[in-house]
Image (cartoon, rainbow, N blue to C red; front, top):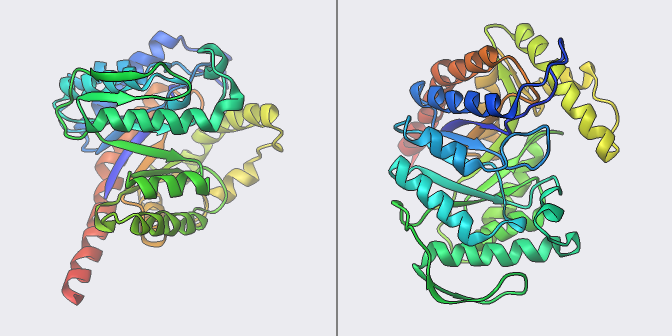
Length: 353
């Protein structure tokens, strides 16, 4: 069972002061967070790509590369790479470079993205949203599989027996499919035999169990070895020494972000009652003391079947020291509890078999 962190490198106004941290400062803070995550024994750190003023990471690979030479074991991934509006050749080259610097710890998490700013920015038509992703994923997987590539599509110039370099340390460079819960994307990941990341950020996480089963059915139908499939979750959360402190610290910035997005997308107001409901065992927020968060991750592992959990923290701008403390608690207290319990299950399963 892998435990890690994901971030979108938010730069929203401080709830108390209204101050907006600079992109440069927040990027430097994230590098420090990755270094700490490695030191406290976390397995993976993901940085998400966005192209708007309230997120500083338009180039996750550059941030991950900055952390790669300062870390030893932690895996470094995008979360996600908006592949539809990117050039798969450059995506591969960037992450193969991170792989070289980190000596084999880079991953690509490919997704469509939940924001659309990158499409006009890079000259793509939103009417081609689905076709762009399918075509570019096909090209990326060809590059991963072979040094020399021949390929032709409708939205990028053709490639005729050309090499793509550098080649990664890993063979192959891992490519995950990120999904917000769309059954089509889940089936695609299964058919391709690619690892799957589910963004479980609302509703009841147990409902995603049906998607995991669908993913595995698609993979089995395509002839893939189910024992080699991995499923991750990406969920909002925060950890402090006690439950209520964690909730009180995490709610204000989370409410700000959710209401801002709600105004853009037509959602209703995000209230403290809805926040507290999501903190329950069956809710989608992983907020509390280490024991509470560990219990929720174990519950998700047992009932949905995830093999990697990524805590998305912060949601909106929070004091760097508080984020650092949450990462430390995740690595030193939560992760050992989860790993111990999962190891116990696996041992019992082996004994029964």
